[in-house]
Image (tube, rainbow, N blue to C red):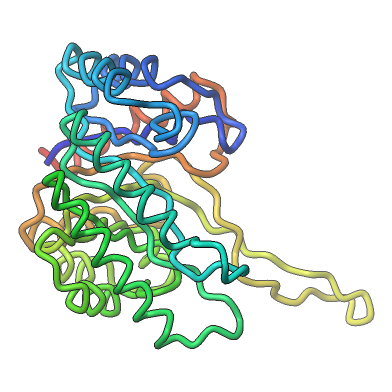
Length: 296
């Protein structure tokens, strides 16, 4: 199992310190990671900012560190556009194809995608069929670059593990796999060991972070009491100190045959603030925990 660092952690999007792409590559190597996963958007690997020449320069930088870049992360939402005349889904297909092209120059073999958020009034069956159709075309275009599309269990459509496997079956492409994470099934109450073992044979990557749950309440002065205000607020904390049972999760992945990339991400506000020193401390905690608890 390789240990990776997701560049979005140093993208500055949640008040954190921001590193440009070249600096991030060197920084991840200095921290001791085996590999990196690059965000396919600004401030990192945006197709608007990189062509063959500049992508090749980043590839040389990665190679010089001894690391690998197996995954490019696309940010997609495959629900229909509000304005029907706007080719919203076609734009995203083109976006993913462009990341496949850039990724192939960097030595990547996987592009990570999301399904779709659901909005009121959508027909769930129609949403499902649309997502399946778009994913098929993405996979067919990715195949031209020898790339695999990994569906991340993040967005609403096909979120539960059983639904995600059903979606994968419907897409029915050999280069369509899973990007399977623990935090989503943990928040929704799935059995982490069972879900991970079930998904493992079809999982290409896993992206990891740990969190605490903070229950919320609202004061009712007329009752001189509080009522529950849910759901809980979720906050990122150092790896291994949150509520997610990562020992069970990784045991399930390994028992199911997974031996791919396990990437760490900081993609929300974190306890202690977003200074570079705190981000580095979190990243190093992940490396230490994984080496002591999973790779021992």
